[in-house]
Each structure stands twice: as structure tokens, then as C-alpha cells.
Image (cartoon, rainbow, N blue to C red; front, side):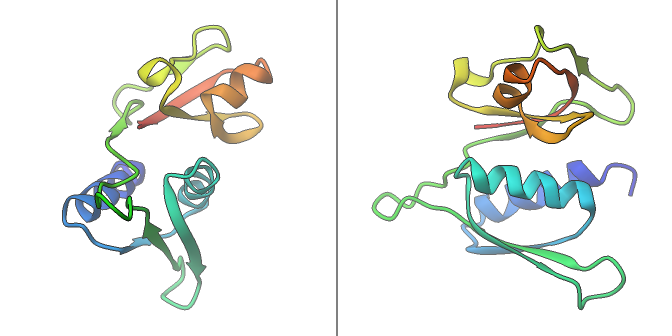
Length: 132
């Protein structure tokens, strides 16, 4: 697999389209950090890291849906920086997703964070994906 982040986003996207409650994803440190960001911002309901399946383990993610309308909390996941074309942004050029309603997940020297957190700390980095 050449792009594990795209695989992570595709597994989430497919589970949402199929209205699954739980999705299993092969784990890595980068995927764990992205999962923590999605949980902190309220896009997923719960997550659990399981280390018993093979050397890398898995991430179990409980997806979040609106109880009355059954609409998913995540409307779209879009990969921005790809292995063939990396997208880096300085602190002043970080993108605003849906005019601030969504988040951009950014890989910085201080770790994985949202665009708003990176802008507040005045650090740029690689824009991994947009979530809204």
C-alpha cells in the first residue's frame, strides 16, 4: 500500500456510506493521532486501539450519527497532500475548510493538529486532509 492515510479515509468513507456503526482500520501512529483529532472535534463517537491483532494492531472507530435524522457527523473526507504531490502550508496560508465549519488535519513539527490550532501556535506543516 503506497498511501495508508488515503486507505484510512476510504475505509471511513465507505463505512459511513454503508451506515456502519463500527469500522476496523489497521493501526499506525499517524492514524492514531488523526483518530484522536477526529474524536476531540466531535466527528466520531468513540475509538479504541487494539494491539492483539498482529504486529501493528487495529483501531476500532465507532461512527457518530444524528439520532433523529440518522445523518452522519462526517459529511466528507478529502485527501489533500498525496505521496505524488505533497501540499505544505505556512502558518498564514493554512486553508479554511467551509469558511471555518470544517477542519483541515495538519502534520506539524509539534504533531498532528487542526488548522485552527496550528494557526494559533503560528506553525505550518503538511495539510493531510479536510473533514466536514
